[in-house]
Amino acid sequence: MYPSIKQEELINKTIGCSRLVYNIMLSKKKDNSKLTSFDMIKEIPKLYNEYPFLKEVDSCSLRCVIFDLENGLNKYYKKQGGYPKYKKKGIKDSYRTNYIKNKYKNKIMKDIKIREYKCPKCGIEIERDINASINIMYEGIISYYKERYQN
Image 1 (cartoon, rainbow, N blue to C red):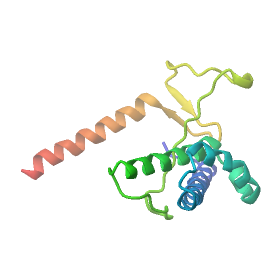
Image 2 (image 1 turned 30 degrees about the horizontal axis):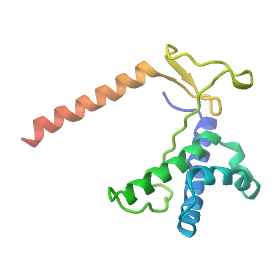
Image 3 (image 1 turned 180 degrees about the horizontal axis):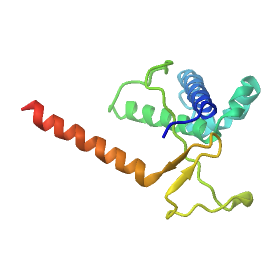
């Protein structure tokens, strides 16, 4: 299953905007160590004025980036990892979202039994069972080759 050109363009925009928000918030956190993730989330509407293209992407993914930054900082403070670094283009380009529909403002409640997900922004459709099968198969192949060729 491959995204269309329009979907691929939106995915790339979301990755770029997520990287931008992450880097901006990391510099703000370096300047003000008492800044919490919720304070950073309140900064997103101000960024919309400065960078209007941020409005084109999923706002949930921008919030997730802030929570990821907060998790990285918490790991650093617990001495479980290094200080978070600025994200660079082309290195582990990815984003995540926590978009869930509910009845708030006439949105439809999402049932856990529904096995397909359609992204409201880019329109890509993913069937959870097929995606899980692919992941399980991939892990099985990796473990098979590790056992066979490492001995």
